[in-house]
Image 1 (cartoon, rainbow, N blue to C red):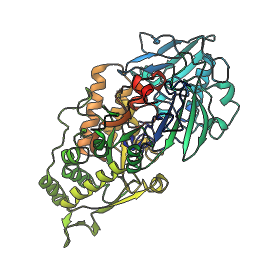
Image 2 (cartoon, rainbow, N blue to C red):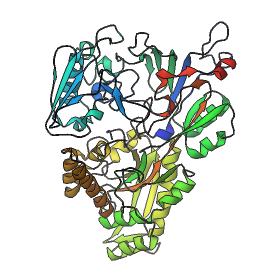
Image 3 (cartoon, rainbow, N blue to C red):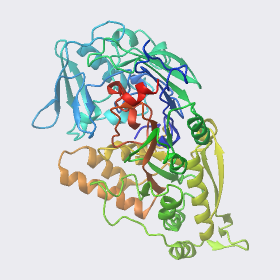
Image 4 (cartoon, rainbow, N blue to C red):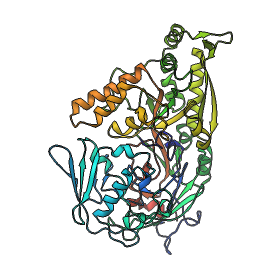
Length: 538
């Protein structure tokens, strides 16, 4: 998980929107041939725009950036496939050397050739402490990266890091452009140049990002020639605009998506995810830092009721960052809803009910604020349900909405209804979420969780290729979270998309929390083709 994934860099996946341009006669943003042929433009709505478009600062680190490519990419089944590399890497027997052979027919959108030096520059710059990349520890295993001629790159690792190849879906930046600027503040952060299927044509912050197809894209020019990412933050507004025909598709919370189930002109797509909602319980607060309070809240919460009532069944209870249907889930770490048990834990720890039913210990009242992101209906609903469950146990939680600018300075002491989750290897999410040394590092370890057993297990899990040893390490992490839960994990959420039927080739992948163009039915928008239905609508 990224520094922004628990925050939602692009924030919560269920607070985004896809808008496919409608027919030219009803939507001026669409284009069609003179004979009323297929449209070739699409509009994509998002809830929260990225902070940067530079791979050096973290954009495109999980692939599918659309402006850039990685050495590898994920296919529809989340299997690695070649991208800027011509084949999967050759890995040495000791797991310490990864050798990539690069394509020779690739150019950046400005016409400059892509070579091994761009790969070396990208990874070396990310690893430079002067670069403001909060996800640098994800590449901690890299000892050095070297170019061998123009078409070969060799990574040497410090230790055998099992999922390293999956890290090389990271977007590659052009040295000839980015190296001439300040890596943290230069124009490249908002006006990028890449090798990807699309080229950025404009970014009006807070409003939209505009793109056009890259006609020289090495894998073929996309049929969708133009698209726009329109920033639509509010779930209800997005649904209203979709219903009015202003948008032709959207990511919607389950209760809003349900309103379109009988719409014959649109289809609903569901994607399985690693996306969770959790409550941070900061160590530096006298109430949330108490292990007894954490344990009590962990069983006072009714997760299944949240799945049934808030998600309308489109999800599952969450007991940690790993979904219960993942092969990495530690069986036996499920926590039952047990209000009486929660009350007993608090009683035994000295938290006694006051006259109003709220518990008090040594003069400290069992109360704390819980922030959620303004306009995010799912987070609001989770926060309210959590507060209601806590109140029954004698803990008073005051829910408050705010922007990230308001919330971020308060995260050391105030609880936050946060999101996170990353498919694939457990290291991807758990290290940034739980490592004590990352507490206070932006949106990493927002709860300031500090557990030496977890720290040791996280290091053990990322420093071996042995499956049994890795299994044991991540089982340890999950069992420790049950003993001392620095977060109350609530639900894992299925993502629902309501999309116009004008395009063919739509599918979904297993998705992370972090989102944007990398997720949803448009994860492969460059491969979309107009349908006959779409042409007829012209």
